[in-house]
Length: 227
Ligand code: IPE
Ligand code: IPE
Ligand code: MG
Image (cartoon, rainbow, N blue to C red):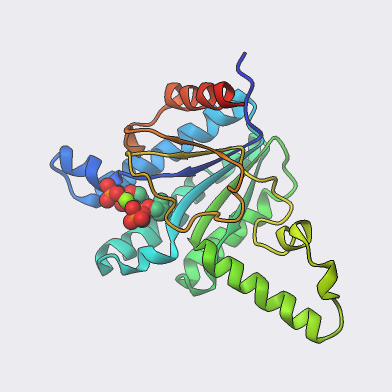
């Protein structure tokens, strides 16, 4: 049995290119990618992974055509909702990182409901990074620490790596052991910059809609070969 990393973070990339090779619209690729998330959660839990983070929508993704953004803003909560009961029954904890306060109200409501419903579960924690940008998270954290210093609640000399980590949106989540990016690009795209300081990085040419259990196990084998 493979020795699974505790936390795998995934940059799910290539939905658009995958759709193009199938002569379909980008939305078709996003729909297929949403199915992959479901399968990878199952495969990750089976392999013994304890935390799985999915880069679902970046702060930069707002720059995409309005039609695509609108589609994703519907698809993301809809997909989580569709599998919510199953995730709840499979003892999956759901956590959202990123600023979802600017999302359409209905999306916010559905995401918060999913997080709340599964908050006591503990077999595997699935983290969806939605409207997430690591630089923004670091700046937000810095601001809140500055306020606490000004208010006399924190002494600057007590600010160390552990303290800072505990103020990020990923507080209490162990750092990723393995970062996977699908579809071949060698970029981090503003994802978990602080948290991946010591992570193994695995980039596969496979596009996200085609990524399956076998690919996840290959990535885990790669991780084990680097340990
Ligand atoms: C990843 O696939 C999905 C999101 C970023 C929301 P892309 O949409 O980036 O697909 P490509 O990179 O254009 O192929
Ligand atoms: C990263 O993929 C963001 C998500 C997976 C949500 P992108 O396709 O948006 O990143 P770039 O454009 O290649 O940097
Ligand atoms: Mg992309």
